[in-house]
Length: 131
Image (cartoon, rainbow, N blue to C red):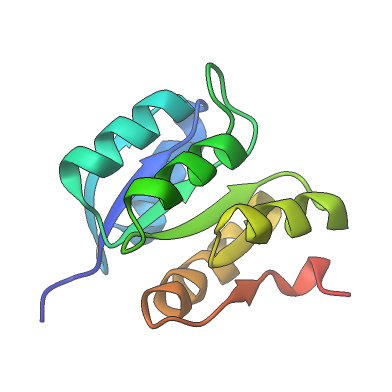
């Protein structure tokens, strides 16, 4: 089996480049988009194994993007990568259809295991926000 195929969705170029650097050797990065509407379109077009998406993005936020994707695409796993640490956001993310929730402050330690867990059908939440 090949590498897990990942699409990145974040409106901050520095975050996208950091995530590319963290994941690049172990995952196939199939693309990067900067808003939620593009995340939906590119997920439908590229059919990645995992979509790593921010909550706060222009045009369409990550939560609504995930809701829309769940209507047409149940295969791609959704991993939120966000600054939001509030339990309400975590609950909303999983209600929308997420498989994992990682805070940007934990990106270096938590993103890779979150992607693997999501791909394998398990859920994952950053240790720093677990209740």
